[in-house]
Structures are given as structure tokens and as C-alpha cells.
Image 1 (cartoon, helix red, strand yellow):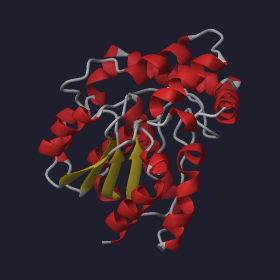
Image 2: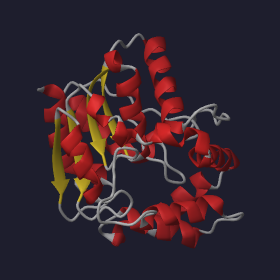
Image 3: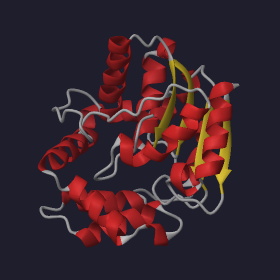
Length: 253
């Protein structure tokens, strides 16, 4: 499972609660902190972020003796999973992509989206505030009541750790590098994906809106789309039971 790219994000914060349902279904599941996040290194990147992360995950698979795996990728992690499947097709059995970056092309919604604006505002601030974190987190959820004071404090502490700030800056610099921009436009290569792909979207997603799904759905040969109503960018938690049933069925059949 590959997490999203918001400030304070990590594999555990995104997917920790989903481990048990996957394990109960007999699925060996690894939660991976991508480069620049969580407890992983915060290196300077020598290529675009999706490629860098995909190569790191491919190397991790080699280290662990995993020849092939299915991937769940949320937002930023969806872009990394897509790049891995394109560049290392033998390693990716199938992809479940949740409001993924890179392959979403907004048809009706202007860029940058509301969620991306608030992400940039937090990451670019010299001294980001708790209120900026609350505003960002609120754009991720359909029901703003889930953004409690404790949750804001937890994510704020994680995001303002010096190592996390460094990681966020280095990831941001990679996305801002015009020399690597074309590599992040995964929608232009999506037709090359040969694996089964399940696209999942929250209908009320304000980070990568659902109208961004249509190009990927049309161009990926073996793609299907599931849209969760009354759901934002966090289907794995906002639609916990439905998401887990859908995902387990996808990876076991």
C-alpha cells in the first residue's frame, strides 16, 4: 500500500486500520513509507517523484524476495504505483488506485484544486500553523467532523518534524522541476498499462476530483471505476467497510 502526499502523511496514517481486514482475507500486506515520508529517508531526488518512488519500491521488493505484488495507491501513491506498473510491469499484478495523481485529468475542475492549494500553502509556509493543517485536512474529508482537534494535533506534529519538512521540500522541488514534468503526466502513458486496474474515487473529492477519472477509465485497457458517494479523498477510512470489501474482492479474484 502506497500512501498519499499530504503533510504528515505516512503508510500507517493512511492505511493502518485497513491492515486487519486484508490480513483476515489471507492477503500478505505491506505498508510502505515512500521516500521523503514517514520513517523512510528524505533524499535529494535525481528524477521525478513518481519514478524515484517506483524505483525505491521495486528495489524493496527485490530485497524482500517479492517477485510480484498487487498495489493499492492513494493520491501520490497512486501515481507511484502507476509508474511502477509502467516501468516494471512484471512486478505489478494489478492496481487499485484511489483518487490517483498523475493519471487524473480534470475535465470540469480548474487546477490547482482546492486541496492542492491548501497543501502548497502548508508546505511553503516558513512556519505553518495548526489552522493551515486543519484547513487542509478538512478538504480531504466529506464529513468535516472527522477532523478532530486530536487528529489535527497528531498530523501537525508529524508534518512539522524537521525531517518531514525536509522531505516535503524535496518532494515539492521534484514536482516543480520543469525538466521532469513530462514524466509526471502519467495519463499520457496510461494506455500502456496491461494489468487489471480498479479506479476508485470519492464523489466529493476536492483534491483529485472525480471528473479526473474519465480519461484514465477510457484509455486504460482493463480499467473499471467505482465511485463512493458522500466521500472525499479518503475512501479507505470514510467508506471503510465498503472499501475493504471492494479491495479484498479485487485482490482475491
